[in-house]
Length: 444
Image (cartoon, rainbow, N blue to C red; front, side):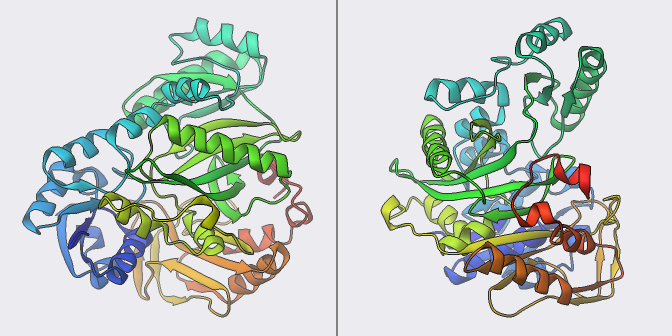
């Protein structure tokens, strides 16, 4: 097992990793920017090291700086968390070349699943269902037009190297295709360094359901159940729950089988998530595989009792999972609300100074947050302040518990998305699990 791990991330995920490492007896080093010099993860880690300015390009995306930080602190491994370099295959390669363990899957798995067009082809070969569309990147507008005519409108254009809801455009008719194609290419190039995009059929009224997988270096791959992530705005997740409500048993079994096939096709080692769209008839289609820890991993931990970050570290150290699929049991229902420093009506980021912070507590409530009071929310990064996670015997109890937890949460000084979540928890369609991806933007 490692003696020291460098954490190349910030915020709540950095603190989450610190906590698992401490329980495992592993020393931690938080690599931070100047903007995060006095953050809670930095305070609670065993060591810290500044790797650059507030701008992420000079700090959290600064590969030479991070590798140097690992070297001077004698860190044996680097945990990238999520975002930043977590799904950068070149970074994984460089770690290996420098004799530092990358806590995550192999560079080849990241590369395969990171290129969404190649991933589609690999998934099709594995026998998992994909949406009708291009087999690879679309060469030009004429090819996109031919594919859209073949599969029928609406279609969705996606960045081949994309993720996180960026570089995506829904096209509802032929007249809109040219403008959407050019816009999507420009967004993809700016966000991911590659302007390649692909085209597939857009499924209206679908649910976003993902399956958590674990794989070790001995070839064991296990499933930790599924999560529903359909509560989104502009392709950004806001609330997640596990297990996914209103799934037919045969659909649940099919999702599990398909997720395992995808993980096997990628020869996957570490924690990862296979994401699907599920239509109203129960048919499902592969979207992508996220080759990292997910923001919403706590809901799976709450229903399975498995520390996913701990498993990531154990797998990276070469340890076997040590249990079988039959040993994994799920109990109850878990819900996570992402509390962002955003205007709850417009979702515009609202950085500023937090003057008061009182997290919720009580039975079945977990809070993952790097917040302190006072604390200045920097404008340079994602606006996530806290994740409130609850567990109940069933969905009804979890919903009641989440409502209570949100009502007792106090964050003064900045606007947050708490009012949005309270409104959502009063929405009749959401309460009866009768919702899908466009639901929020149409009704709330």
